[in-house]
Length: 118
Image 1: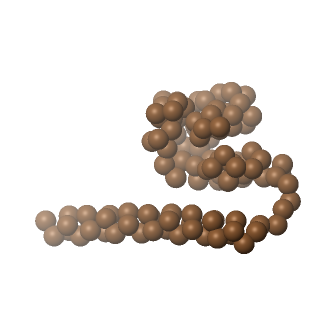
Image 2: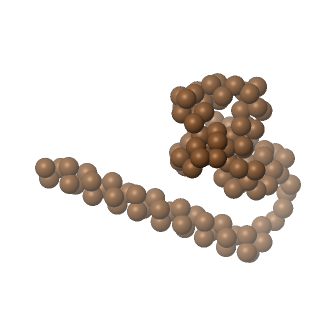
């Protein structure tokens, strides 16, 4: 299931299929949210949007939302022990995410410094 399809599924469950209501609940305009609900639009979804969903709807399983893995709701997820390879994979994912965030932080800091020198 694609990311945009998972978002549609969440609107069905949490807001009776109301994209406008779901968008408002996570702090987006309906038009912006609607633009994400197709194969091309899903490429524009940023981490902050997914984090807003997880904050607003904490029962949503993060792995399902981000990767389409596991049960949709955390309460539906079977209790299982993570294997060493699962932990290593997750660590690698988090390290890559951290590296990306650090690079963005550096670029933003450089821009601010350039703007301050002008």
